[in-house]
Length: 171
Length: 120
Image 1 (cartoon, helix red, strand yellow):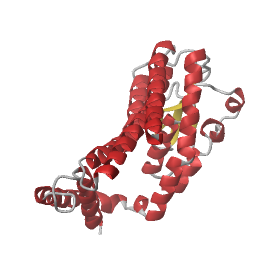
Image 2 (cartoon, one colour; image 1 turned 120 degrees about the horizontal axis):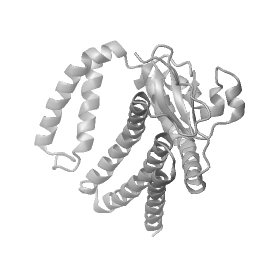
Image 3 (spheres, each protein chain N blue to C red; image 1 turned 45 degrees about the vertical axis):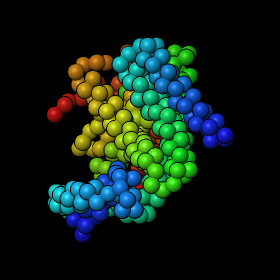
Image 4 (tube, helix red, strand yellow; image 1 turned 180 degrees about the vertical axis):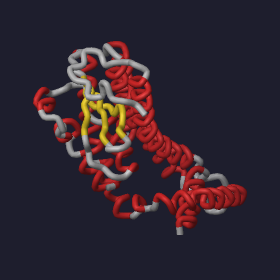
């Protein structure tokens, strides 16, 4: 099963990259054969990896949620982030600092998703990760005083609902 | 016509944010704040530039028929967009981590939770 998933996704990806190369619908015979060879190789190489890590992230429901996340809350947060950065570029008003948050994520892929989302959204940039406790160290461009008072920092002040989304998408 | 205006508007937005990223590199005081400007604005600006390319080539694809070579342009641009969204923050993260570990401290920082942490 992992072999088939790897093979089919690699083949589809190759076909996407080589559209309009010939007259067999959209592809030429040579490209189809090359694609099949590459897909077989990729499927064989990724079998072991996929069997270890699992394909939980690949279920259709998660894909749908992921799409909804990236065009909805993520894009909106990103637009806000950019207006905010432009404002700070023009006025030069900054109040930076590095804060630690504990998003309570269990999987590596969830943590990666969150770290990347945080980097692209308002005023925050992931600097380091504690691999044992899954805590993130974040450079925050406009530190609010209220957040600093309690020690397990409330991540809702810093990056909104992004950790909740990451937990929903990749546990 | 409307599509043309959309394309020009997207290019304008993209150029504006990329320009702001460049100005931010000049105006911000230290490494981390500069990284903020460089990552966020250049990613957001490039998204709009790529969207303009996608709209332009999709229109040409629809006009010229299914087997048009324009399909390559739109699909490749879309894949480039996904790659950009994944690699740009990852790269920034790697640069920030490397910077902190080689001793670059944030200027004007009011708090630094990472200070004094042991590295393995």
